[in-house]
Length: 353
Image (cartoon, rainbow, N blue to C red; front, side):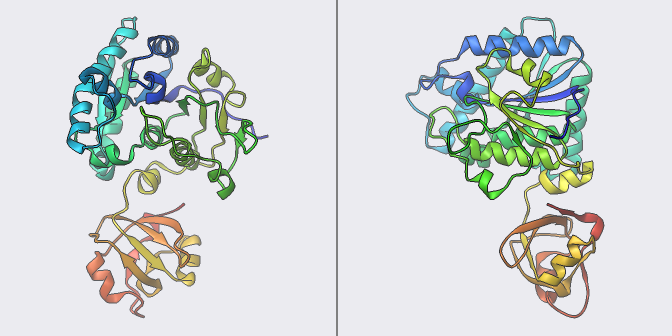
């Protein structure tokens, strides 16, 4: 098996709601005490740890004494607003050392906009260099997509790529990715359809997502050159153990050759504003690092402007690339398929997925 570099200085740890809270929304103080002690010891030894923590909505539900997770968007946003403050207070209480913790709330717009993306990156890196612990969460109070679909697993992978972390650890209440015989798969080298088929969607009250979103997060991390481990957060000293021997605890998703920082932003840091369907000739050209020309465009979906990021798909509806367009959807719709070879996406603005 390929060997990993073990000098993990920059680490992102994702903590799920199912670890922080019981099914009736009571805080698991024992777990929080254990995980904060591990993180504090690592920071005191010179590691830089960013925590992506779910739990704002669950914390708000507990504080408001609601019987179940609200279905109405406005109630979810209210619970998040109250719960985020409660969650930070709990982290502050359990980090017993003198180190600072910092609250960082992000939305998709912070990733979509390149300037805001770089500002977020610089802020988190500065906090880490100061020896602080950023506690990062989706801004559920204003981010309707997160509340509706739920995906802090993906956020943790995006944060890992944002700061070019050395390791991503996703803590869950399962031991890792299990095969059909319920045995742990120790190492995954590639996300295949067979691997995806092993995922499930959770039905737990306190969280959303499940293994499906964790595999999607692992793929982002792998493609960015960052090893990812999905492990059971209730295992004693699990963070320390994973850092020491990532191949032996949970499931290790082995990294590929990493993309450059700007390529990571194009590939993963943005929500595509539309789709461009291309023919086989254009697909071959793109895979050979050529620009996308209008003659190879068969169709398009969505409304996008010059400079937006779009998905590039083939005739089997498979997304194989993303790129920053040089034409708006209105402009492209008028000339798609024409022999007038207008450049749609320059080769320097295309990332093959």
